[in-house]
Image (tube, rainbow, N blue to C red; front, side, top):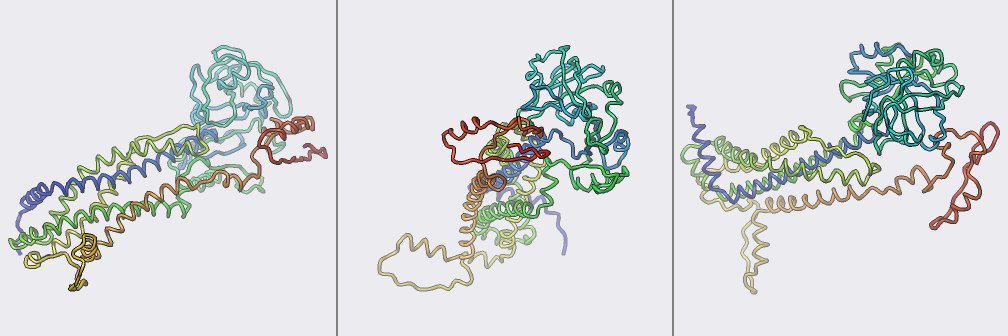
Length: 529
């Protein structure tokens, strides 16, 4: 068979047929745009929610690092930077076991030396000034300065009462820089000193953690891998490469943990989550497929005689399929971009509502223009259009000229029946009979309509199914816990720090109080209530 170069002719024929179906085109563009909106909205919500949850969880964790090596000796930083698994590493040294200023009773402050990498990973972005350089310089967050009654002004004197290895000392510093803490971050302040400070008090900051469990002098190494896949395994490999053990019973044990903020570290390992995401994508694809498929099938059936005539002049089935596929791709050029734009802004508007319903009501909302949102939504929409035009294309390609002339769109398994009626032709009876002419198409239309309702119902059920009270009931049995502020700072040492009976009595008198109880703690034989 001779191969004729008629691609331009086929394309021109496809374009002319496209222009002749303006109503079909309008409806198909809307269907493709709606399908794209579904994909784009889903991807935007997913990406924005994960990004926002991760960022706010990082703020609570105090670092955006992938992993942390805890309470380690000094001298490991260069080895970590040389490890092929690590992209960058930061250094944070603990300078005090506690900061004891009474102003920090309800919001404790931790004292460190941090190199620029560790400071950046710890969300420390100075509003004014610089990181400490001289041994008497210090940088602090504005909330800690406010508690001390010190204005956020460079050069201000800051006096801190600190405990280092059981010895309490008072030291005076000069403020070299300050930053604004995030409102949604953990309720902890930070005081950063200089490398010169660690050199001056090197003897005081000797590493003795494994001898007496004093944290002062120990180092935290903040690690960033090249990607977030298999972070637990990577961190374990890094520790072993340093020559340390992960077994707490070993003498060379070195503690480490992966950041719990990164959802990608758990989502891929949770089969239920993966199946839920796959089911949602499959449902959207199926919904879009049935809608677009029905549109093209009706269009092909209406123009079936046209395709039969094309067969009489030698058009092959492959060329007819190409005509229909080209029309589908051309409709996608109009429908997909509109769906991407509309879907992104719809998703961007929904993400804050989701965050507001979570535990991060005052948290940061991030919905960045992630290119993968648009690439993924466009590819899924193109795939939906492609599979939707295959069956109508096969119908048009397989029809013979003679069959096209007498084609009636009646299922082959439907037998003609003569009906006798005494009440005349009723509209609802005629409509019901018409549904039976092509039962397969009727079933597909019903399914496509049902899937739209199922999809909407699933989204509503998912967003409203979380009951915070039931969730909390699995962890705690009470609504409130009242104690001395030192209890929440893990510094509960004396019976003098218990709450008084008069205070308990006032709590019991409050409206809405139903019942309560006391927690008794035994410390060195002394019972604290």
